[in-house]
View (tube, rainbow, N blue to C red):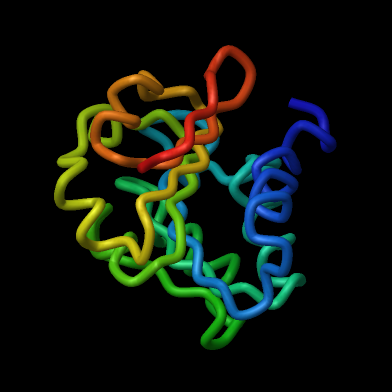
Length: 153
């Protein structure tokens, strides 16, 4: 994935929110490939770096790469937080961004997510979800590439 493509999710966030400063974004998926903690040149690092530079806070989760993320971002202070699970990551966030297609992210409890997030808003960099399903749950959904974006109710 080239550098510009890695920035697409953050550009979509800027287009949606305008200002990112003061926002809190939940990020699912940090590793390069499922079942590895390799974080070299991953989209998640670009997303995290751009969000932090814009003054946003990032709450992140990955089933395998938490220790590697802690090694890389541990000294970033209060702007970056690693969470124990996917739902903790979403709690109180302005939106959810998905950077890796881990199996556990494929079928979340959308009702629970809707309750945890400040607004039902997903930026999906992996096109995990059917936009029509998200619309039925009342989510605003931005998919990339093949994914159709939908506005929630």
